[in-house]
Length: 126
Image (tube, rainbow, N blue to C red; front, side):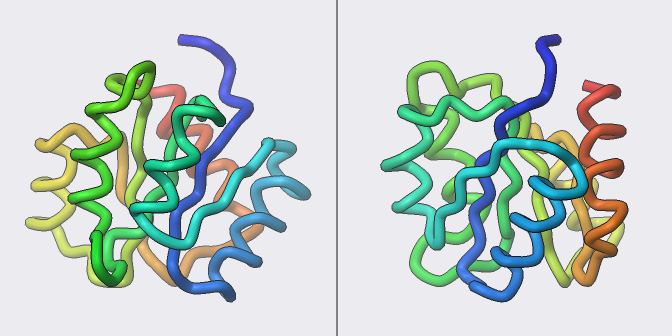
């Protein structure tokens, strides 16, 4: 697998966006593009060509699972690893998301100082 450099982060919460961007860019050294909705993610993903997508599960209009399914239809993104982020992770939902093709699931709240390491560990397992 190639090196992890570019991450597309999709979350409707601006506070979470701020924390994740600081964490991934400052602590992790990644290039991060952010979108506030599933529709916005679909519009920018093909042009950005992320190595990985960090995707909020619960968003209005188009939730994370729908966004995930639609991203899979875009040229060049069929195999892009996706890590879901959610406040409502329990064993059954995590297993369900993994069975649908998610690389991993990160539970909110998370530690911004360790988020890059969590993402790198999941990436290494892919």
